[in-house]
Length: 226
Length: 371
Image (cartoon, rainbow over all chains, first blue to last red; front, top):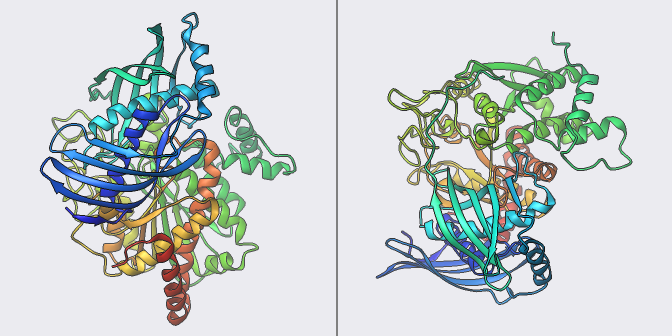
């Protein structure tokens, strides 16, 4: 493994940077705030006693406001277990998303009309506009799983919210059951997870329970469809 | 001859299917343009693509013909369109295939877009016309026909990747990763021997008829092909051979130059960044890919395109991104095929000077490491 300066375009730096993206989503993400990795500008890594440490300078893009900004991060991949990330992105502060988040929270807090949805996005990449915040929320919640599951041989993205169901609001937190499909790039596998999550503007996204769904190797013989 | 869906029928079909998908028509387009524009901003199933291939032949009989060059496992035709001005001489060729992985729907959409573009441009664009005169374009809109059809079946099949051949004895899962099945360092890196895995490389190299079809076709055309392009999604990458970390292509520098030039052309269209490099450098090691096989048999310029996006929608790229994704990909492909054409048909001194200048500029822009 290369030690010292890394080519920022090569996969070791980019996989590490994706982990920083997942971390930032767990810290700052919401139905109106979802971060993606832009470019990696500088990267270096070295072996340490606890595992492999990376230092990164990268650009993060917030997808809803379309604002990008620089971040510095330090990341440790331990021998086993969840990567540990420290990141500072001075520009990632609560700002005008507050109003949208509050409105969304108030709209769904009252448990008279519990929302649900499925196949977000659908096969054509479409989703109803009202489903978009739930898609973002699914992506942010998935980041908890993707962060925990990441190592130097993985690169995760959320492929789809298979379905979600809103549950009764509890302790001022909106609650949801989510079934998400994650795409792991290196193995190319689609991995199903179920999660129980909460969110409020004050508390942010929390994941209470995660449940890995078994891969269904239960193929029917193919239909003869043209 | 197939008369069941004439042009009028296809127009009506397109207008009907269009409901609920795609961007609204913009005022000012005449009827034919609007229809075409809407057609190429939507995903199409295999039946529609087959009909479209017939339409391309019918509307452009002087320059478009088709060829069935193999059968899939489920015994469906694997068809390419051969596009070029007729010639009595044997012509050089450009190869493009799309949809080797079923779920990468933007790839067949791009092949369709590419064909439409060159057929429109060659009449007025002198460079495209020159290339159509000197070259034939061999375009396979959907290589993994069985897999593509399966991915259209229902919600649970949309993310299918592999072929649809049954697994070996004792394994109930289906499919081989066609892009791990070619005779190019087969089964060495970046594969799984578990037949349920997405990168299962098959029981042996070329176990899959789809991979054999391409191999046989390339064998017949050997020596004529100037560039081999295989189109995938997602990640926004241009991959150069080889997938094995310990093996370098002899013309790695040239491949990087041309790839970086293509990435620069892509960025100029809509600002999107495409990273260029070998698969082991920028993505992951792999073996048995069609790109590697093409380079191994001597095709000098062999590239994998990974189109939009970088993970936000992934394989389910929204239809309103088809047009911009295809526009930028076209610019990238055009850069490569222009280079390939000019290298074959013009003096090498001029080409080298141009590419050296481009190299300096793109190296500075992208801060890539050129070895």
